[in-house]
Image (cartoon, rainbow, N blue to C red; front, side):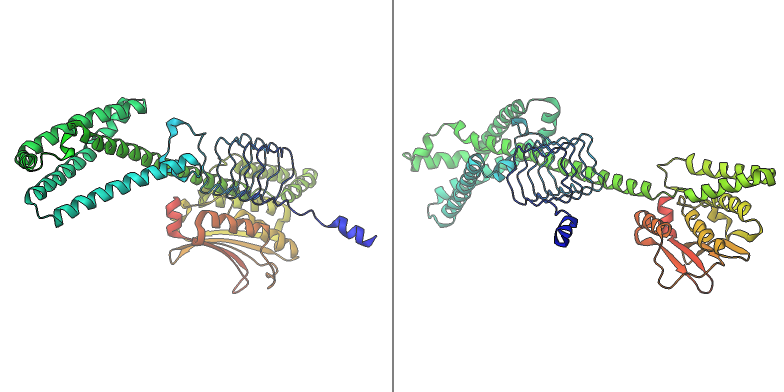
Length: 480
């Protein structure tokens, strides 16, 4: 029986289906927390309503997968294909979408040379072979004519090849420059891609004809005539004049196509970076919202009990405490929740109101002072609710533990380009082994999110007990 009980108490292990083919499966409304689907094919999968928190779907194919109303918090979808994915209603806080492909389904308007070459199917192989053959053919042609110029002993043939090299280099330079110049206009004036390539081909045809004719009459007429007389039977002379126009037209269209692809890739990278920045921003904002301090419910209970006890004994104090409590909650609920900063002046006003409420409760057992070394510091912006949790801890763990007079001092000062926000109390010292409580941890986390390493929280017992928040002045100025 002991063995059976121990087996029943063991937590279920997370599902692990690494490198699996699961196309078209239905995982709707399933608990898949911490599951591992890395390197798997998950096309057309139904994850509607599923719990995928902390799941790993790295390097996976998720095309046409639906995640409607699913929980993807802290899931890892990095390096995955997400074409036509439906994330309607999904919770994605903390999810990792780094380097994912989020395009729509492929169609001819989205024709991608790089995508085809990367494709391991027969189309990608055919395109790669064709491009390789054309490039190799061109390189060998260059090598052949260069060898002819260097090693031949026939002056007229050398001059002809030199003329052809000059003519082709000039045609190539003009073709690229012209294509680059008109590509922007083509994109603006013509909507259909096929028509753009047709117009570009016609323009390049006429431009290159004009250049070839000009170079021919200026430099090549005499050379070609002499060559034809010396070698009248060479078959290459029988080729029609337009035969040599295919090269510039192909080069122009290829360059225009590749430039469009480059712009699309750059735009996709920019869009993805923007999405990632937005996700990171939303994640940070969600974490900050979770860390926004709220008045401790126990404080509210204590304050209301104090008011109830004062209603008959001291109605004026009860009224004063009610008004202070109203002011305090107006501060916490009546401000823009998306604004994570406020002036030191407003923060201190909130802290003083909080302490006045507590003073009504504790009476003569509580004394407090607020000191600002320089009035200009009042206008600096610091994270909202940065001091209230510390003052609340000073009351809870300091003054409330004392039978004698409790004293709280809030000091704001600047030293060595650091802003210091200190809360002192004369209550029991911090234990050496004490870890930071929730209030201190929330402040540390908030400072980390907003300032990184340019802010810190320190607890001191010497020379007197205090909690010290330090923020680099330049970091404050950036948020200011």
